Image (cartoon, rainbow, N blue to C red):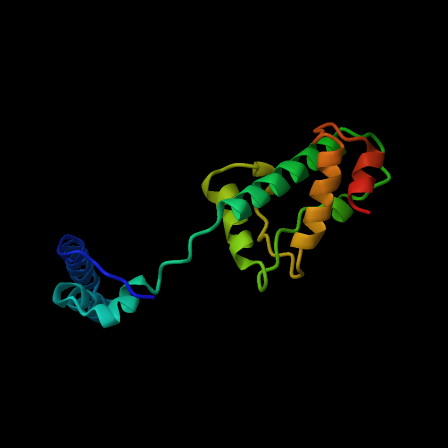
Amino acid sequence: MDITLTPYQRLNLYNQYTILEQLALIRNDESEAKYYSKLAKIAFEGYSHEYYEITDIIQEEFSYTNADFVWNVLDMYSCIYYSYNGIDNSQISFESIKFRGFDGNNEAELRAYCSFIVNELDRYTEFKGGDFNSHAPSVHKYSIMLQKWNEMGKPCNLSEKQIMDLFK
């Protein structure tokens, strides 16, 4: 990917990396200071071939479609939990409906975003404390569940039968 930076952007990056270098030196972290010194030099000198060193740590943009999917899954599971807690003497075990998250190997971006929503945005607190790693691909399963939930009208007061139908 070809990246170009304006002189103003380069100066800002140079200043930021120089400050970070100085902070690392204050903490006696020579390795980190050297790293920031290198990035400052790349920005200051305009070594465009090496700009990847600066941008390598930045993740690809997370798509709106993926974000919307994660929010919808969390909405659905929140309604499942709410409904489950309102059923007396349920024949369903909580373990069988527990939200497991997304696969850490194949759905890592979805897992990270899910964790961000719950732990950083402080939403869906009923899921706090989980690691959100299902250890198995989950997108297909959640897609089918969301389709069924949408066909039901996205109820937040599901019957026991409706909950069981979602997990079939």
